Length: 426
Image (spheres, rainbow, N blue to C red):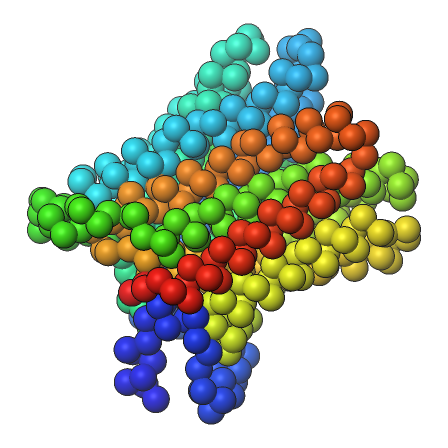
């Protein structure tokens, strides 16, 4: 059985394991094996710590962004630009950062990215002009894009096929954990020290992440790999494969659906139809993140039990059900049930998609490939609210947004399933 697991690559994730293996995997799912990668790979712990720190820092400023912007006396449209321009910064940085990390190593990029976030955060806290604040938010996005792309590539480097799903589940757990802690901490220190305080906190977090990369992280690329030119066979094939293209499209659609659903549809429908307070809406978003987090230990088992196609298909079905339940919700019970279903659907799919992406790429393309996938994802993040807002203005109803999300998720998942059935991965 162990030999079978070692030989099993991400390409095989499209097929479920035999029933005996399923029973064994279910037992280990309930034990401490979820944390086994931390004992097996010493470079994983500092990497996960840095991921959690950066995501916590990003969350620290989220509760006060719109309020802080209003202190500059600008229009509501410009207030929204603080979020959009951050995503644009990540879009600009993702692919170049991935390519550069392949040429100079992951460690320098993991040091530089948080350092940029720290410097721009201090500048944002000190600025007295909204145009400068927009610039510093753009630079924060660039720093975040550099770090997140390099961290994904580093995780890919240290994740052989047999351990890839488990490592990606831990990566997602660190990301979700930091994202959950950040907003509560940010709101607390803003209440105590003022609206600029979260930016100072983000500066400190960025410096801690940079120091961690410098002091305790060993590069996941060897000096020989950094100096070695890209093989001609890899250079020709690059990332132009059907499975990789399909998983990038799926990533973009998932980001689109998540940002539109959680940050536009949920608040609007909850306030307009159920008359819920801002506090309850915030608690619902936190609850969704907590469900994502708590479901992660189950995700490696589900992937081995049902295969990648089964997990992605099932998670898409749950997400679509959650969206339809949200639209039909006429009580708080129905509303919370919709959030629960939506959270489960998102949580079980993330490690499968990340691991499958790595399996589509040769090792020499991990950096560029992770950058490309994140570019698709951030494109969904940036353009999702714009498209959803335009639909609302044109139709005067949220129905179009719900239907668009369901249609896009269904089509993208169908493309992914067909592509992984006919294409090859490693």
